[in-house]
Figure 1 (tube, rainbow, N blue to C red):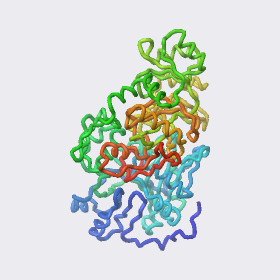
Figure 2 (cartoon, one colour):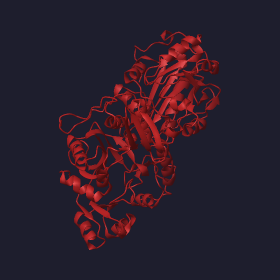
Figure 3 (cartoon, one colour):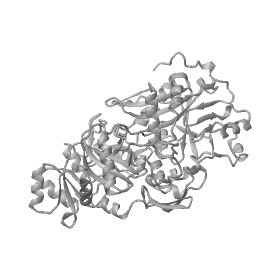
Figure 4 (cartoon, helix red, strand yellow):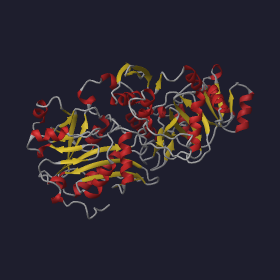
Length: 593
């Protein structure tokens, strides 16, 4: 996209003193341009609520911080630099992707969703679009899937010479983010190289970036590309977003993402959080004389009866069916000819333990007697209660219902790899598993087990085959997130009948927070089949939807106004996903900012 006529020419931007660039999630303060430390401190104290300002290139930053210890701290990040005048050639295209500038506010909003999905501080979309259309100093790039048009990654750059006639002809990289569900390898690498090419063409001499010292995947990427550490430190203001960087939050840092999102939202509202068991995700939340124990999204408000209904898929089917919710034809395994008769009747079945979670023991697509025997054994054998269900066509839809309102909905897809033409399927699975683990703090990985091997064989491949460029291969049968599945938000698209069915199922069970799983041929249509109810859905999987906010509203309704959500008694209203408050980011991202 060419600059429009109203973009500010280089020499009309701002003076070379007291230079600030607002990126929407926070401001970059160029410390070398501030002659008055008191003015710098005053500017940094004006940091907006829910924003993260960063001061870089401040001479004698340690002295400034020592004189304002109550307000500021030295960021525990490395600064890396690439000398653009001597860098090696950077062409490294990915055939299925196009890198370009965002073309409208909608694409800036998509960039913002990537920030939130990577637990980064969200940005002001209007300000981003204003930067894009009016400033030559700020560069936004997005990686777009050529087949679907989906935005899979983004990077932001600042041209220091355009911004304030930087005598060093420098530039900097900010906000590199890749969709955690992305299956295409090399997206981050592609974005960084495109930024490098653009800045080199402008005659810039160097590109700097700041990366948290614990962000090993990003550090490996940058060092592989030729970046080297330089002795430059960043200064940040002490605030709630940055607290884990300057104070001891060891207990909180040991929580998994599903408990941490609850703790962060509670802390944001002034609710005291005590970690009872970090490994299992148990918290005690205290506010105004009320004390509630939670385990991730499960709380004392969920009754033992409701939990027992969710725990046994045989009972769940009966309870929701009695409430008018559509369930697929089913049969409790008897390990005799009646199982074979049921398979012959429905054609293809899903075999799963009556009790269990995270996809353990489930086999989909069973269509013959030999496969049925193997699936029954995988589910636990004749000493286990096992359910056979007619396999319904469509996608696996998870609907999060909180206080009998739909707060989020997402399609879950099985683990998939995309061929490069040079890597074996085994290598692709390992790499994709590593990316999923990094994006979910180890919660999602793809096992190299018999299920993965047999799934690949069913598709006509072997683990050591080289997958052609751009070919997509499903490597797991189920869409469970713990075995590498990915999640894709469809909250704004679901048909009112699907939302109503999810709420009806939650009411029938009597559970105030649940993840209802439906099999749907089309999220915009009314057809569905109920699969199961989860009493402890992972709220972090649905960011930026306000799941944690709605959960804390349920527990402590006096702490904030409840986010508006779709209700089944107002079928003409589409879901509203605009939750209150600012998301608080952690540092699960490629480039720290």
